Image 1 (cartoon, rainbow, N blue to C red):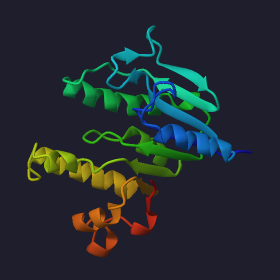
Image 2: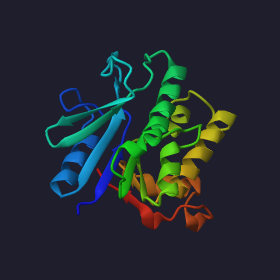
Image 3: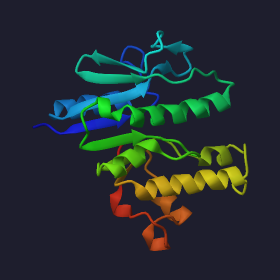
Length: 208
């Protein structure tokens, strides 16, 4: 029996709308390798003022070629509505976990991003059900805020974001980064075990 992989990425879009193809390609490659893949994305198309769900349904399931796609209904937001976007992000992960019983239980979960301030419902679901959880990072988050001079690293909000990122990373069964400096980054943060941190670099992988 084929094993099932859930790919959870809020900003994944249908192939005909997608410009960020990473999640689509993962789903395609895993499907071709013989896995049953379900790709979870938001019904709200990022930066497009479009919601694929117009009737209030909690989610819709679509088949795009070989890709089994579930669009989770989340809040609409604009480029200027930062608070709504944060709430929309949390609602997406919360609702994936809430509706999880509607779908075939996965053997693995690959999640890109995740709530940074509030608890991570997908991680909790994975741990509760003994499902390996793979955390994928596409950028140097949340350091971007500091690097662009938007906020100090000493700000309490940044300290919270760093703590949440560190905790989520430590609890994941594997970490996948799309940027080659990930090992140096973790060492600089002293989050790796050699520096007294909780993260085993043997579970860290660079894939790009």
